[in-house]
Image (cartoon, rainbow, N blue to C red):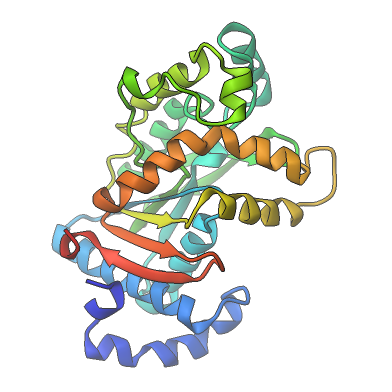
Length: 298
């Protein structure tokens, strides 16, 4: 079933009036985008009520540039303004290991681990600590990562006492490790030229296994990109919006960068629509093509 078809008549009738209230805060996005955000918020309210959970944990995944952060922020805004629900958004990106630690990994394990992003370059112990604090309603310290500096830039405190939702967004959230037989052949020029013996991709796959406990959320959303070319264009758009500085990448560097994630991203495009509770399919213009609830699409 399409997400919007799951809305009651009363919920559907309210979309226009809520949009009038929230349009100025929706960062130039249109009412069609809001329909899907609002529909997601209504769906979550139903799931939370049915679960009886005081706090409801949601994972949001999708390839680079798919719009996970924007979608999560707009979802939080809608939950707050429409349903008076308090939410915390955590980004897997903020849990990147500091540059010095990734440099050390690159020296003792594989040079490609200097580049942030793949499993094995996050501080999953720290993330588990933050998630535990959120579940227990404690004050927690959330790291902040500056991509233009490629380094952690400190922490900020957050009081998790009265939260209704904890939303965790990350490109590989929900990905699963694979068997050895799937790791032998290189899939792009990065793996061909810089991981000839497969040591890097095997290490990444082994570290992904240790993320599985983190991925155990109450519900999950997958933003499905149309193809890897779209990932390049959208990720380049994101990079172009960063302040100019030594950390800003060229388009060629972005192309090389996303090759680090291609293996897992391609596999997620095949697997996640069958596993995520809600799959939001994007077209090449970055518009929502469909939003399918898994229980109604098997």
